[in-house]
Length: 556
Image 1 (spheres, rainbow, N blue to C red):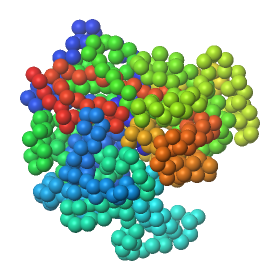
Image 2: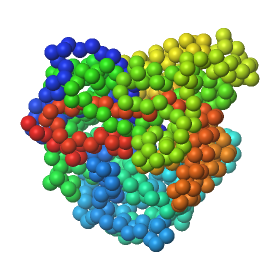
Image 3: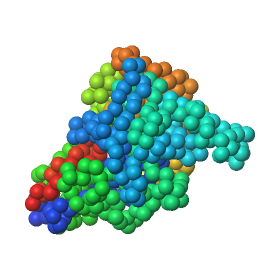
Image 4: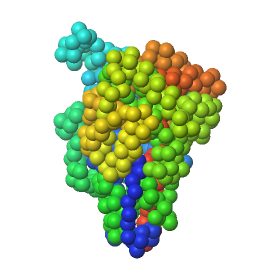
């Protein structure tokens, strides 16, 4: 899951008036900047990562076939051009010659083949594999064949396919191949309008096999600065875990002459008070803002980041297997009050899972308000629905004390305490809070070690499917393991539809199921707020590239 972190929830921090609002701080070095990343990225392996924090680093040091410009349009990256077949399914990318990895090797089509083979080999454990495999020819066959076991009921059972047989099977079934050293070709399962833009997403980045093997392969690659190969505008020269990451300009990058920054230091400050103090003291050039702090900065900025924020319920844990329980808990939160008193910006109450930042708001408008939040302060029906669902699961309200998993930042704590108070006041529910580090929260979600988590998802590409295919049975981002055969069927059918109106109509059916079944509980669509120093210019912040400093520069 693309787990957003930069502006998680809301916090109220009091600062000295003399320190606030000037926006003149920042790093002192010429062409050097410092920003607050907010938290430790889990890893920098583009094959495995689902973290927005990791992607905000990877975007600067590894480059795919294409990159995104300031308008989120695809521009040449490792591929200097591409051709599309008449049926709009097969794309042939022509790689630029002479592009280098940081280990000295040339970037070739085989680097893409290797990365994609790893991604769709089920034994690698790439969470996004199940998301992309329905879009790329052969990917689903490869994933299923490499996942199949002799005894499906036994997790320790041997795989049916021997490791030695996998390369040949991939060569015969993969819809991607190296036509020659500088030509990479991929065939999609449908005429997707967003196919080229999708290639800018980290899941499709190249990986140098020599560097991958030297780092120790799967689950080791990308865990330290020296366990990763770079072909992008910057290289990671230092990674002090839980503290900072330092990126320096890559002189071997093909477009190095247009990269203006020499050095980017990314800090990992989770406490907003500390970040604000450092910004005002001149040691940080960009920080995220939440709650009351937004108004304290006259030059604060904001953008619709496409972040959907919601309860995710573990449907494998009683009573969260019950749709009535899930829906009642969602109804128990006054989402507008959360925005007004905690978030305090232009975020909107969510009535669909897909936010208006996607598809220029067309799809959200098409769907209308599918989930009806309570606006009259009468929660009696929601409480009755909860008690009914609990009874079906052999529980009473007095026996029900669920646990909410959240991060350990001050913003996340305030957010969790608000939700705790809401459920107590409106439904009589005692909600326990379990705070852990960002990485520990991600691990717990991956392991299914939670009852409820307040989670966020930001888009990977500009289409509603980037949200809706998450909840297909077996998807790696479906942490709550919810399963609905009709929903699966709808998503599969939609993926084969080229006509926009018919496509939207089918996806609306999926949204209606989510609104009724509530495997996730819609709360709000996020607006991200931040502030930059006066010296930092050219920062790109959009729903599809949370932080992009590749076009940034310093103006003293």
